[in-house]
Image (cartoon, rainbow, N blue to C red):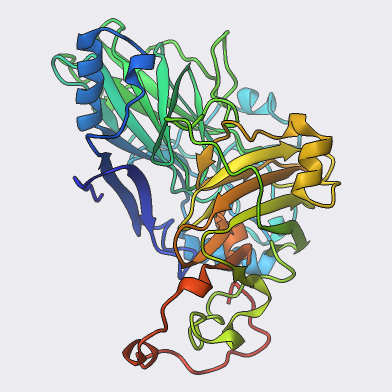
Length: 478
């Protein structure tokens, strides 16, 4: 874990992209850059009492970081090759981890059977893959009894700040803390207007920050991390422990707290609690409206032409091919997944349209974007301006979320529209954060502000780089 004390304004996930297995197998970590003292805080919208406000600032200064993710028995290098050769998506996890800690908990077969609406699940709670199941090893659940991650409250803390960060491979997660409310105060490293909820969604690549009032009886309370992905019924556990409370073990094994949950094993609310709404509950603070018009527009159709190939452009992205020689100065390396002509200072609209059934957590590097629209039934308009005019209820140009992650809902015909402004020159990657989709080519490169880029000095051009041309048969997973 890497923690920074720079006084800026964001929370980022640091990881490597050259090989799809690296960020999943440990080459990752949070970088916590504390908000500068001059930045407005939204805490007065939660409470007006001076001591409460002081406690919230103290919680911010002592933030805890929780990396929540799915974990597999096999390494992602093995699973990615299996996916390439068989089309079997690596969606069956062994555990849901918090900061690398967790355990495998086998469900009663009768419980698993209640979730067999979409097919018969195995002892891991997993549906068989749509293709390639005959080439896989048999999966059998076996309980483990390793420790849980513990968020330990300190004496005098009235609030605790938790940064939930999702660097995982496949599962969209829903998070809740038994018997506790959460105030969502930041998304992807920027403050939002606070929203009181009992559960939040965290997708791959996303960061959600919450303030938790420590207003319950001192004790241990379960932090629940449920997968809301159809492929598996699975939940991970962590512990929120109040100051002065001793660790509880039986026969040397850490015990799951006997606390009252807000969500069940598949993330459904169990009572009348409030779930965070990603489109309406993450309003930027202070107010930060998007530009009302755009200068450029792209429309990308998500397709799955073969089991182990996912497209965003007209063909699968092959990152290795575009480095020979480097794309930055060689137009011949760019290919059909590179898009330019975007001037510095201009505003860009991107339409994502789903022509396959899966959910896609898209992630954009370098520039955050406003999520201005979502809908179903395909994007049937000629452009965004026409869509806004004819279907204003599908768009928000007043206070939409401002993030670097954008969810395209599962189901054929769903669509999402983002808008962003180019504020500095960059070659930006835009990709799906589901590891199988990323590895299978669901990536593009956006050349932003090339008109403002300075010419590269010769010593950079002359650095060592690959010159060979790979065989045409190579695909994105080779």
